[in-house]
Image (cartoon, rainbow over all chains, first blue to last red; front, top):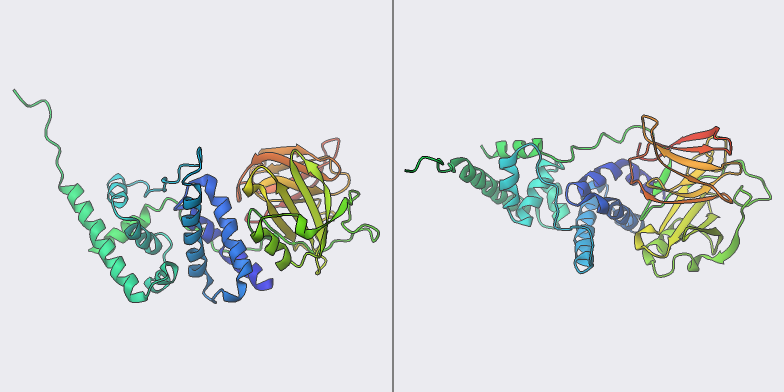
Length: 159
Length: 205
């Protein structure tokens, strides 16, 4: 129990931030709670570097939550995801990426994880995470470049 | 310069990283729809829970039927074979017990909504009920138990604004308002004349 308490106190805020970056506010408390229930039950399986493990649990919990609520009328809007703020062009380019691309980029840019830790969250090899990351980054850059090169037609100039 | 893309994305983080968890927090454990642990305070020897409302004994296995995660959490928290059903407030059933370590643990069952169920123990020393710990509540919602003499409880933010308050009856309270974790900074216990009896920092603040 002491170990669980340490893990909980040390990582609760980070886990909550992780969830808030991916889910609407009404879901956050429930998902965070679920993550720590799993942590409590599996405390012997939690590695010393607990945070990527907790993020991995949160990721699966969010996926389960979305699945569970998909068919529930009046359920919170689960397609909603917090988007990058203060940079509309970036937000647009980011939103156009696939779920997998967005997730690896979020893990690195928002959670500040190394690719090795990101691999733990995604349950893949470090090599696979590195490949995913570089491809996602390239695609984001390409979308940003495409957005930058777009010039709207001047209006009101026709005769 | 792809690293610029990542730096730009990092700058646009909608939820900037939390502060390091170095500061001392109230010693609660919050698990699922909420769970915490508590160390025994100086409580009357003839009262298991240290409050007037001692409730009626029920098997722990009946407390949160059908919710295996919470049921297992109760086992992990070493809650014994029975808990005390203290009563029902607005459809919220409130249970309490001291676990094997002497901590008071709380369980709440709201039959209408899955996520209104929860378990909580308190690890404070001294814990509930004591002069500094007059209330044992879930940190995201005012639901729990209060010491004798507490007539109402309130969530307040760091600036002292009242976010939610609810009366206490037979040591029990349950507000239907969900404030959410980390929003309220303190829970206040007040007597019947509105005098502040205790102001407790909430976990996560």
